[in-house]
Image (cartoon, rainbow, N blue to C red; front, side):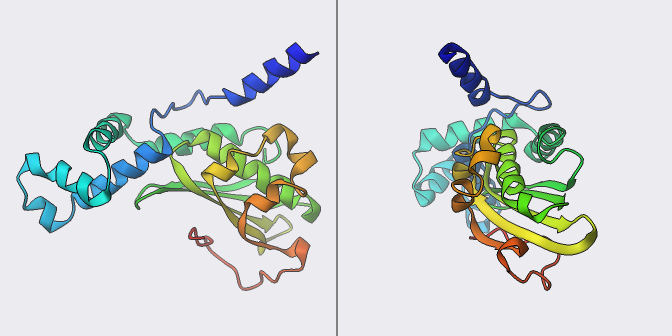
Length: 215
């Protein structure tokens, strides 16, 4: 019995998505994004090519070799946004939110990656379970995301927001998708920030569009 449990745990820990493997960590992607943003600065552009990367590393307080490695991996990774979004589609095709998904999006325009997951809720008591599942699956599917923003609309009244929250990728990775029904309310919801839920009596009548990703 113990062997089976260990094997199952290993399978969960090593779950990978067949659609698009991403050979970048969250930290490497953040470094690469900061490098790209720095390269748009006129002061950096005015430098000789061999001086740019050392200057960026010094300003960001990175080790030069670490930044060089992150830039190389970032350039080799290709379209990370498209890869993450392909993985999202695969990740949410099964499980608690199968057939309930609205938007799946990855924002790679800023200094860090932000994942967005929207779904349509049928039963308010399931909101903690669905939110926990959404965050955990998004973190697995897109390892470069730093923040995951999740929100739900009422399936019976799609313009009505019933839940919204955000969670760091590090916290989302602590959620076991196979145990969300057991621990969503008692443990996992404590990992989220800026939680608003009609199930808790919160008024979301004025909420519309994409929720803010900043904590």
